[in-house]
Length: 60
Ligand SMILES: [Zn+2]
Image (cartoon, rainbow, N blue to C red; front, side, top):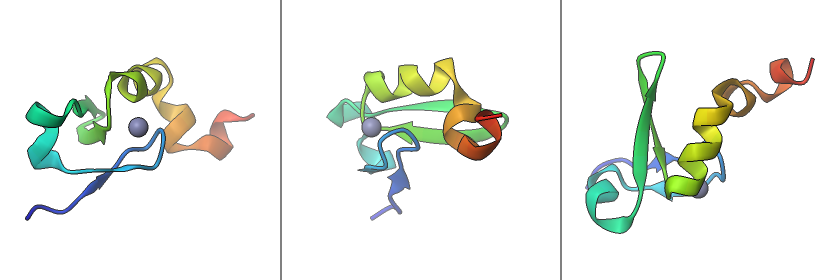
């Protein structure tokens, strides 16, 4: 069983192996791959990656 990846938007754990079958999805950002429970979370992340990766920096 593969390690679970954390959805940076909602915090849910996503199984990378299930991406193609469960409705989960992924996105590459600055050379790193992120996994999401669904398109809604993916779209939120794509619109504002730094806001999810560095919430404190993004506030300024
Ligand atoms: Zn999610």
